[in-house]
Length: 157
Image 1 (spheres, rainbow, N blue to C red):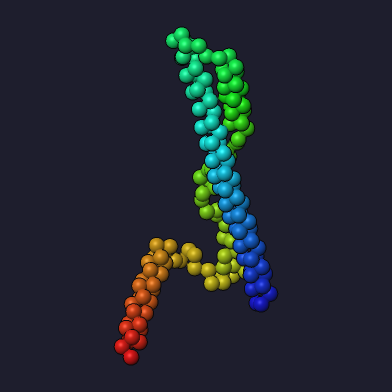
Image 2: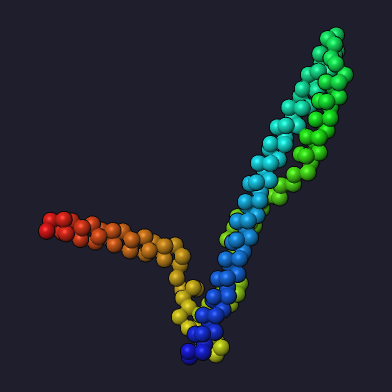
């Protein structure tokens, strides 16, 4: 029986490592998303300002005001440069899959069974998750009440 427990424990440890690696990958992806989103936002603002300034100069020209060609060329070059920089920043989308807790198929297969096909302490199908949560909450409330009573009696001493 010790061998079965060791195998089960190794499988659980392996699964926990996989879960940790998957979580780290998702956190890294979210960090990259945040950094790239901020870079893209900065580039978008710069491009918008350059485009708007160039557009404003065009309107001034239409109204008959002289605009130096050198200034217009510099602003055009800036607009093109900022547009290229904006297109160079790629923001990878965060999907619902990235935000959801992954299912644990290997753990589900391991849960409560051993090499002989016997059910060893598995009560997944028996316990309702909502009922288990309610019991846990009730235990916490009870522990809090007991703790308060103990603290009160200690304070009185």
